Image 1 (cartoon, rainbow, N blue to C red):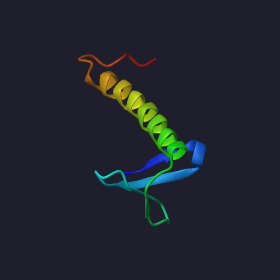
Image 2 (spheres, one colour):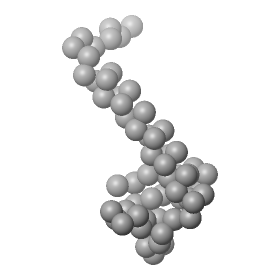
Image 3 (cartoon, one colour):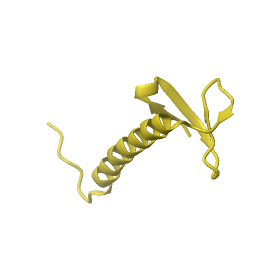
Length: 66
């Protein structure tokens, strides 16, 4: 998994169910409250974008091209 967290200018590459995260080039850590908020914002934003992509691709008839 790779999630760009723009407020931190960091890429989240792994997470564990216990809440620990690992950013690219760093060791495992428990994110601070600010980091957690930044990660959640980035994840929700990416989810919304992916949902739009899924909906566009699932349409039965593709949009006609000019």
